[in-house]
Image (cartoon, rainbow, N blue to C red):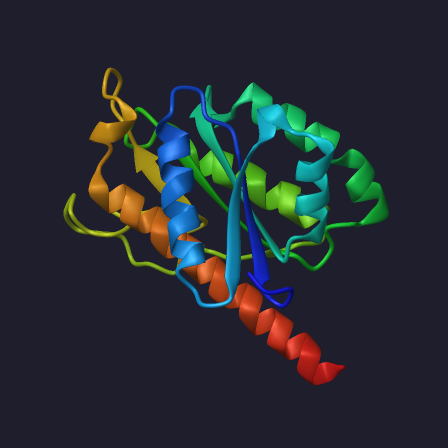
Length: 193
């Protein structure tokens, strides 16, 4: 990608591979927008290069399974580790969004997305919602009716390869939407300069 590419980083934790599968769909959607460099970063394996990539990103999309009504403990550790960046407001004015997976249709996924929005607000980021009406059938985008971000369901005992295709397409839609907004924001800043 050229130096002028918009950078979208998907910072996620996955316990059993389901969130990784959704993260890959989000990445595919973002990367499908011309001039976008999209990368996955697992938050439980962060190195200095990963932190540098997060700091340089135009957009960060948070992802985690919903465990016990919130993001996973590994994601909470990542959020805690961003405190120095919060203090410096290093992520201020970046684009942000989020996605989550649980085994229940509700599974308190909304609370996980709300947690992500508060984290983004603490950092002074611009939150991008899903912009889809609730689906009416299992084959529809946004079949679970989320508004703050992409939600997916993977009933217990089903592996990542058995995830609902419409949930993955909803994740891809979110990635595309985030990349498009990151490009819009960059163009607006360039026009104002």
